[in-house]
Every structure is written in structure tokens, then in C-alpha cells.
Amino acid sequence: MRKLKSILASKILCSIKAAFRTLLWILVLWIGILVQTEGVQGKLYIDITAPSMRRISIAIPDFKYLGKTNGHPDLSSTLPGIISNDCDLSGYFKPLDKGSFIEGPNSGITRDSIRFKDWSVIGAELLLKGGYECIGQQLKVVVRLFDVFSGKQLYGKRVLAPVKQARYLMHRLGNEIILTLTGHPGPFLTKMAFVGTSTGHKEIYLCDYDGHNVKRLTHYDTISLSPQLSPLGDRMIYTSFRNSSTVLFMHDVVKGSVTKISDRKGLNIAAAWKPNGKELALTLTISGNPDIFLIDITGKILKRLTKNWGIDVSPTFSPDGKRMAFVSNRSGSPQIYILDLTTNQIERLTFEGSYNTSPAWSKLDRIAFASSSDGHFDIYTISPDGKELQRVTQDQGNNEDPCWSPDGRYIAFSSNRTGGDYHIFIANANGQNQRKVTFLKGDQLSPAWAQHFE
Image (cartoon, rainbow, N blue to C red):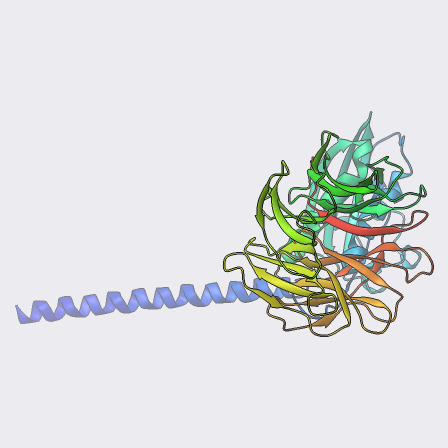
């Protein structure tokens, strides 16, 4: 019996050892595969949280026509031009000049038909190849993204849409490319509202994030200010002067309808959406002093949020809606404060700069604001606890009215750095890659950024 037990124990031990060896072999194999995968992705992975990024060189040649009769030859350069501009504005890529391209005329858009050496020799790290075909009023596009060093295809897509939606189609593909390389979608389908003066009056306009497809929304021939798009981008609030008073309106961007929200005696200004999209904060003077109140989207007052002898304006909410930053001169000069909406405690956030205004709270929990200390306004960002103050703009005219992209990775602001008129610029959250995106006559001010809506 003892011998039998000994034999059984020995077999069990051997089985355990064999299982352990198998498990160890699987683990080693898994680690090996993981290392190989990371080795391929490491060269192309873009860490968008890094304080400073090296822009990846990308080549985007003209798209090839894949059909027989080309009714839209201009799309050969227009389509890649849209994606190239997206790549440039993203701050992650450095599109190469097409004048440096040396590929032969027989080069195609598939891996086997591409001579990658022609691209590596000019410094390209990524290559985006595309082709298109027009079938009636429909546009069929195929794009493929390659790693020039390895020749590996990183992304490929075939899409079909009406020709008139070519810009939307390219923005959509650009978003997916950014998602492939960073793990986060790009901002290319977002919308931006702003105040424009090209008519001689301050009116509200709406455009794509890159300044294209501009549409005038108000025709009041007066002063309209402070546009704010809802979290979903389907509604917009703004203040307009009417008969020497201010009125808060809500514009349904999809339906085009306009509703009066607040026309109380005195001021109805600087309204901001709460993240739930159901409540608004705005400055009213119904008690004599400019204080901030919480209202619903019908205009009903829900709560008085500030009560002070100073002027309280420019509210903006934290991502969870539990805190609100605002501007007040209660300390003698305009500074930014934070109100805890649960405890009603107020703390001063900014102490540097003689005039701090226009706070904007990002989805990633950073607060951007405009500050003046030397006679010029510049954009800064700061954490809600008052730490990590960072300067975004410097020595480039006046920079004002900051707002965040919906994902919190980009800042838009108005600047007169080009001389005279103000235009909208966008930059990465760390201030890198500042680019002008509006080119209209007159000023473009007070940008408001939001999600795309259908």
C-alpha cells in the first residue's frame, strides 16, 4: 500500500511539474509575443499625454483615380489636402511637402505596388495612400496607412458617401487614423461657434473645427456675445443686446429655431452649460449686483450661486458638475475663484497677474484662462488646486477667450498676433502647434467648441 501511495504521489508530482512547465512555456511565449507587438507599435505609438511631442513625418501624395472617367479631377488633390491639414492641425504629424516626393508614375496604393525606399529616403515615417472613384453623385474612397520602415499596413478603409460630403468623409477618416495611432479619436468632426464682425455688427457664426463651412446664425444687426454650445453640440446659448438691454437666447442648431431664455431687467450675460445639458449658470442683476444664478433651460431660476458686493461673471463648470469656476473682483482686481456647489465654499484660484478672466474648465480637469500682467493678455492653464500653472502663449499680441476641445486635448482662443483684427487659433493643450483657423474679414472672437451633431 505504501509503495502504491508513493507511486501515485510521484505521478501527481510529475503531473504538477509538467503542468508548471507548460504554464511557464505559455507565459514565456506570451511575453515574447507581447514584446514583438510592442516592438512594432513602439515606433508609431503617439503618447499624446507627453509634455512635449516629436511630430511624426507623414507623406500624403495625391489620390489616384480608380475608375474610368474622372468627373471630379480636383478631388485628387483636395481629398488628401483635407487629411493633410487635419494631420498638421493635430500637432502629432509633420506633413511633408509634395515637392519632395520622388515615387514613380506606376506606384499604386497597395503594399506590393509601393517602393517604400522612395519614401524613407525623403524622411517619411508614415505614408498615407488613397484612391477614389465617382459613381454619379457618390464618392468611393479607399485609404491605406503604412509604416514606411517596415512596410506594414497600419490602417485601411473603404468608404462611400455623396460627393458633397467629401470634407466630412475625410475628417472621419482622419479621426480614425488618429484613433489607430493614439488610442483617442481626433477632433476633426467637432464644431466651433464664434462672434464675427465681418458685417459691421457682432453676430454669431458656426464652422467646422478647421474654420471651413462657415455659417452665420444670427442676423440681428446689433451686438451678440458669448456663444456656448451644449455638451452634445445641438443647441447654443448666447446673449444679444435688444433695446438697451441684454437677452439670453437658445438656438437649436439642428432645427434652426430660437427661444428666449432670460430677459430679466438688467444683465442676462455670460451663460454657461452645466455638463448635464439641462441647467445653465449666468450673471443676472435682479438683486442690483451682478451675481451668478443657476437656471433651467426654460429660464426658471433654480438657485442663487454667488452673493457678494463684487462683480461675479464668466461661470464654467467642472467635468462632474460639482464645482464652478468664475471671475470676481471681490479682491480688488478680476481674479478666478472656485465654488464648491455641495458645500458652497469659495476659494481663490489665481494670485499671479493683475487681471485674470475667461476661465474654461476642460474635460481633463484643467482650467484655461486669459491673464494680463504686462499690458497684454496671454493664455494660461492651471490645475483646480492652483498648482501646475503653465503659460500657453507669449510675446504674440493679445490672446483671449480660451475654450477647450470636447476631449480637453486642444485649446482655441482669439488672437490679434497677425496685426489688427482678431482671429481664432487652436493649439495643443501644452501650447504647442499654434495654428490660425479663421480668415474672415473683421474680428473673430469668443470661440466655443463642441461635439459634432448630425
